Image (cartoon, rainbow, N blue to C red; front, side):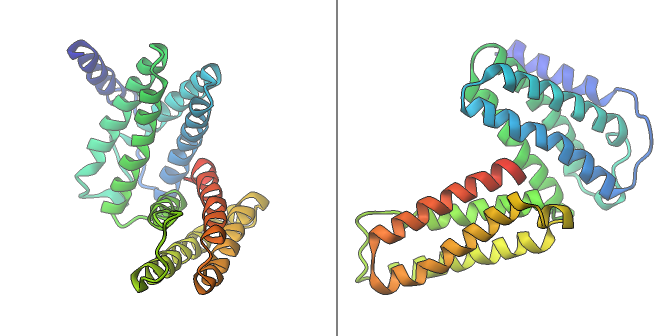
Length: 243
């Protein structure tokens, strides 16, 4: 284990020390480059979940190439928006190490651990951008996932509708989830915002949320269960495609 950790650290430092092709102060360019890498990460995680390790390995290779290119451009000169952000250097090193760890885990057959390493990258980037007051669609989708998780607590066949806190809790969590979805809808770029896939997921989730007041009024546990199952499906697909 100690040897593995040492190897991860060495490779991470090597990535940082690679050629730096250009100074970069352009946040939009940085965000686009990160998104290119993140897209490969999402696909790799999807393949790992379905047990398709060959395709997961291919996507992981592409992800590592994309991250290596990002390091070459931005490791030594972060965008101006990250000036003074102490998490920047840490995130670069951590993500490089996580990619090495994911590759090692995948090659040793530990697919769940590989998926966890890739999923942790999402958190690293979220924390980095949040510390500088930067919000991108992927971060908003992450917030939407958290809001959905809070609502899913009420997917319980033993709900006691007689308790006001239960009815209020469902309505409150649904309202928060809807608010975050509206926010994601508003910050999505025009191409994504108008894409059929994004519209199907966001509009579908909103339509489901519109049914929740009726389930509360009629105290219909089965209806609420069906709504929440469908919402979870939309939520998972949003994370897979845009998170």
